[in-house]
Amino acid sequence: MEEQKKEHVEANEVEKESCEDAKCTTEKHADEEKKEDKKERGHKHKKELEALKEENAKLKEELAVSKNAYFKAYADTENLKKRLQSEAESTRKYRIQSFASEVLPVLDNLERALDVKVDDENIKNYAKGFEMIHSQLIHILKNEGVEEIDALNKPFDANYHNALMQEAKEGVESGIVIEVLQKGYMLKDRVLRAALVKVSE
Image 1 (spheres, helix red, strand yellow):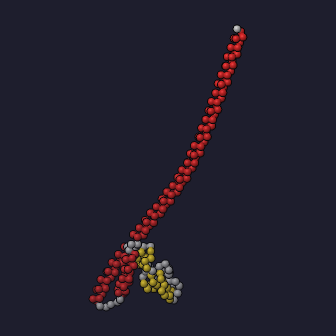
Image 2 (cartoon, one colour; image 1 turned 120 degrees about the horizontal axis):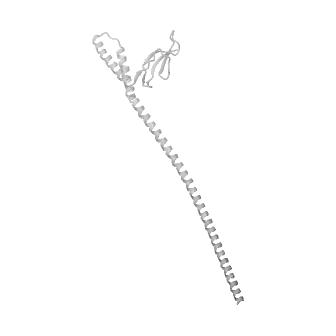
Image 3 (tube, helix red, strand yellow; image 1 turned 180 degrees about the vertical axis):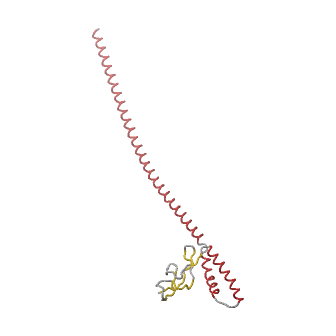
């Protein structure tokens, strides 16, 4: 009887040990699975992080290219705007240039006619009318920015004068305008026509 009890206890102990071994194996297997799963998740997370970093770098590059294109387009637009404004301003400023250039020969002929000295009273009356026309024409041109270049007795300046002749003149130093052969005119800050002059040697 006692032997049977002993055998039963031993059997229970063996069974208990077997259960504990099985439990340990199961737990060990579960731990390994957890570790493997954690490792796999970590690897997956790392891949996702690398993909995000790569996408971020690509987006930054695209943003830099877009910014570059924007600033270039903005600069081009500003330059075009300034150029158009400058051209519009120049057009307004010198709008009379072509007309004034054509009128100047008429003005020259009118002045030559007025320089002629006459004794006939009838002709003198006509001359007074021409003088009025001349004064009005000069006034209109002046209002538009056309003015005569003051050349006589001034130092010769190739920007404003065109020397046709040179002549030695006593008491006058070299390079001085001693006679204006044809008047020159400015249109605001631009030379409309250079003065034709005689210069001292």
